Image 1 (cartoon, helix red, strand yellow):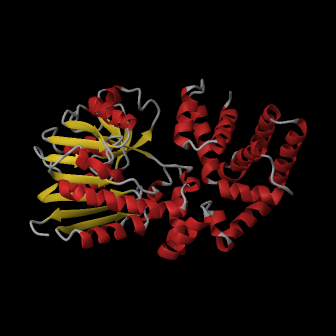
Image 2 (image 1 turned 135 degrees about the vertical axis):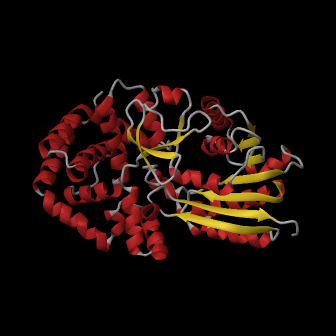
Image 3 (image 1 turned 60 degrees about the vertical axis):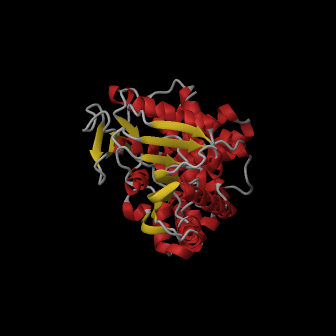
Length: 420
C-alpha cells in the first residue's frame, strides 16, 4: 500500500469511527512497510485533509453538481489538498489521485474523479479566488473551522485575532522535548534541536529516529510542548514535599513535578483510567522517577481513597475542550460541540472544589487547562474563589498561541489561608 492509498484508508476509517486521528495514524503506520518520506507524506495528507476539510468541501461544491459518495469525496479531497495547499505539481497530483481512484472505485466514479481534478487544474486560479473571497463572506470556510467556533472566537477575540488563531491551528505543529535533569543537564547529543524560551525545552529540528536513539531509551528527555510546563512551574514544588496530581495521565506533568523536586518527596498521580495510568508508570520508569505512586480514582471521588490526607501542593490539570491545542490535534475541531464546553465547565468546578480539602493550610493549589474558553478558565476560578474564600488567588496566566508561539493554556494559582 503506497502513501496515498494509506492516507485514503485513514480518511475513510476516521469518517466511519469516533476514534481520534492520532490513534488511527499510529496504528496504520505501525502496520505499514512505508519508511521515511513516505510516512511523512501519509501524515501530511491525512492531517492536512482533516485540517482543511471545510475548505476542500467548498471546492468540491464548486466543481460537482451534487455531493459525491464518501469514498469518492475523500479521494477528491486528497487530490485537491495537493493542488491547492501542498502545491504538488499539477500533473502528479491529478495523475496519482486518478490512479488511486482506479483501485478504489468503479469506472464511472474514476472518470468523475478524473474530470473534476482536471477541471480543478484548469480553473485553479478562479477557484482559488472564490475560496479567498470566503475570508470575508464566510471566514469559517476559508479558515476551515466549525462556524460556531469561528463566531465564538470572533465575538470574544475580534476577527483579526480569531483569524490568527485559525491560521495557527492550520499549521503542522513542531515537536518539542523537555530535558530530564534527573538523567542529564544538557541537550542529548543525538537529538537535532534548537533552544526555546524555556531553559529545559528544545524544538526538535529532525525527528527521524527520535524514539530509537540512546537518549530516549535512557530517559534523557520527554516529548512535551512548552505550554504544558507552565502549570508545574507555577505550582513550583520543592524537594521533600507532598504533591497530589489529580488528573495525571499520561504523566508529562507528574514526571516534571518529580524532576523539579529532584526525585525527593512524594507524588500521588491520580486518574480515572487505569490503562492511561499504566503510561504514567511506564514514563516514570524510563525517566528514572521513583517518587510517584499512581492511584486509579475519579477526581471528584478522591476522598474515598485519600481519607483525611493533605498535601503541600495540589495540581488540577482538568479535562477540557482542548481548544488551545487544535493545531496539535488535527481532527478535534470537528469532534467538539459547543454544549461540551458547558458540560466540561461543570466538571472542572467539581474537580477544583474536590481539590480544596486536600490542600494543607498555606498550601498551594493550581488549576490549569489547555482550553482558550472563558467558561472553562476565568469563570471557573471566579466561582471557586467566591465559594472558597479561604483560597487567595495569587497569579493567573493565559497562553494565546499566535501571541506566545506555543499551544494555548490557562493557569491559576491559589494559596490556602488559615481562615475561611
